[in-house]
Amino acid sequence: MFDSHVAILLDTAAALVNVLTDGGDRGRPYTAPRADALPEAIGAVLPGEPAVSMEEALYLAGTTLKVRRVFEAMDGGRDDEAAGIVNALVISTGARPQLNRVPGEPWQMHFHGADDTLSVGWSAGFASALTLAIGSDLGGRLGVCQAKGCDRVYVDASRNAVRQFCSRSCQSRTKAAAFRARSAARPPA
Image (cartoon, rainbow, N blue to C red):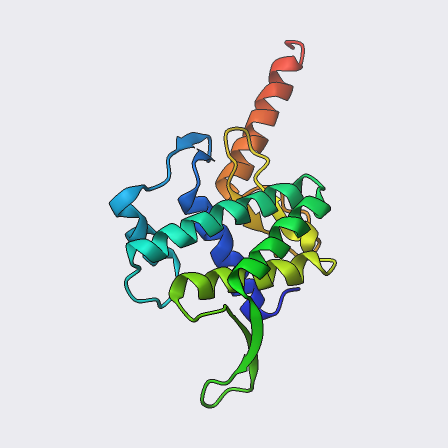
């Protein structure tokens, strides 16, 4: 499985993708926040961050579109495409690992960007975490919901890597629809 810092980065990347990209969400159309609502929406997803400026929000929104393409490519078995997007993101952010220590804790590997602004730092972290996922046998754990009318992304943390849905809600909707279809196909008794 992913180390805790990488897991946090991947989960945060997926959460930002789901908040900042249009599409379907649990069977309903979803429109991402725009303009003045963007900084607050991002601030609600990033753990422990101060207010997000409009400039940072726009940068992260651009990163998020690239990250969505990575999830879609990995889910579709297009590893080369995903790697190309991630490599470009690593280069553009100047992503680099660094050992950091919180008092009372052991050294931990964190990721930083060419500068330590909120937007570049998080983008570099996302790029680094995606690099570690795709560069290992864990890349297949990046997925796009298979439920009808939903295209939200997820990181599969299940023990046997069988997750297909972004949420229990989508899984239940899909199972219920399959049950109704089987029931309708049975001849009347």
